[in-house]
Length: 111
Image (tube, rainbow, N blue to C red):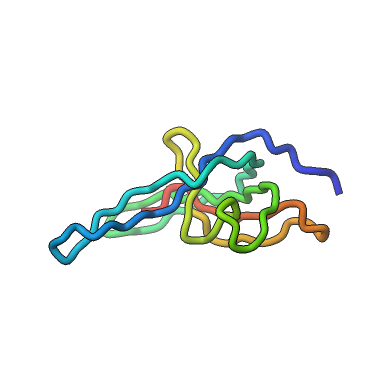
C-alpha cells in the first residue's frame, strides 16, 4: 500500500462546556493540536433542517495513527478546523493493517 500524501495541516478541536453559574453553560472549541492529513471529498447531500435546506459535504480524512486514549487521536465528539472550514468527526478507524494511519469520516456543513 502506498503511504497517503498528508498535505493539509488541520487543527484538532474539542468542545469545552463551562458552567455559567445560572444552571446553564457556555460552549467554546479549544485546540488539541494540529495533525497533517489528507482530505478526500466523498460526496454531498442536502438536508431539511428547521425549514431550511442545509448542504453537507462528506470527507474521508487520513492522518498518522495515535494510540487509543492519546490526546492526538481524533474522536467522534471532536472536529477539525482549516481556516474558516470545520469538519465534524463522525467515525475513526484504522486505515491500514499495520496501524500506521487512521481513517476518519467527517462532514462539513452540519449544524
